[in-house]
Length: 452
Ligand SMILES: Cc1cc2nc3c(=O)[nH]c(=O)nc-3n(C[C@H](O)[C@H](O)[C@H](O)COP(=O)(O)OP(=O)(O)OC[C@H]3O[C@@H](n4cnc5c(N)ncnc54)[C@H](O)[C@@H]3O)c2cc1C
Image (cartoon, rainbow, N blue to C red; front, side):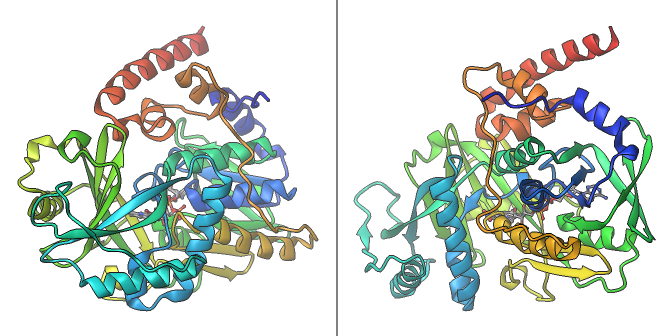
């Protein structure tokens, strides 16, 4: 089935008619949480408007490790319920979503690693929580790893392309009638008798619009506290921000068939090496920052990842780094150690405004359903939300990808195409360059068409 148009043209006509239309709900933020919420609400017939200040998935949801996982390391902190919920979601997504794939991990045993019994115990509990009881087997290093590695334990989690997961939920919401607008920023809110009058601004033209809605859903991730202040929220909870970076290197340096989990000799933190086609992603770091805008990757963070990896795999030249990316975790916690802060989401409700705070990529469906439950109650609807959200969108085959991104996934800029629709800039250095040129050519042509 052909997907409907979702482009700069539909965006412009949606904006033109925005003030005349009636919406039940305004979702603010087009990361995984906003996309999942909008998709769920659209599927149960709620009139939904979503605004995203930049491009969809331009925040944390394109800068994660891209794992759909139960969080094995959280077991060390006794976070059993959290791990069980994440495993359930992982298993749903791996069975029902073609863009979520299994990936085998090797946990390396090195002089700095966890003890064998610790890993064995952790993997046994992880297996039981996932409904699979097995005694984890230790594999001796028979030459596949450097001699500092004594051996490894293996287990399976899942991996995805985070920004495509977001875009697919957005396109699915669009298919079900939600109006989803990228490059539109929420700027102010006023309470009125029927609900709210919200002001939004088109970031591309600077033009402002006022929309009337019955409910507001704040899904602004690391910007949540800032958005709460704009809304005049009475109680802004403690939301700490932690930056995590990944470095991207050619896969030839490691020649891995599977992902690696190992422990940094510097501070004992767990790190991953994740094979992504022609490249590997190595991450991540976990350092408090003060603002969601502090996304610049620092030399210290790069050195930390390089030194930790070099201690296991031998010296890795800094010049081999193709690129790096960083994201900010919103943590609803007052823990002094970002690594120990819970990754669970919280949902707050205050005077018709619902705030989704924290959370992971993996559990976005649970957060979305919890929000939908509150929305249906508020609107007096009797819709069942069991099993939602479903991703009711698939790209067509044999299409000009860049043109498709522009016509059916509302890509507006080169970065929207290269970084968030095609993922090429972080999955392959060469493809990134050719895709960029292709995107520039198409966008220039569209610009000429629009002027003509
Ligand atoms: C380094 C790192 C690794 C991670 N790895 C994993 C992992 O492997 N697996 C996993 O499950 N989770 C992982 N996570 C966590 C996960 O990525 C995040 O929890 C999730 O992406 C947060 O999504 P979100 O929608 O809440 O926020 P975001 O994706 O940040 O979306 C919020 C959006 O709101 C928009 N916005 C802000 N203010 C406004 C406004 N005024 N008007 C309109 N829009 C606005 C922003 O532009 C942004 O796009 C990781 C996080 C990090 C940082």
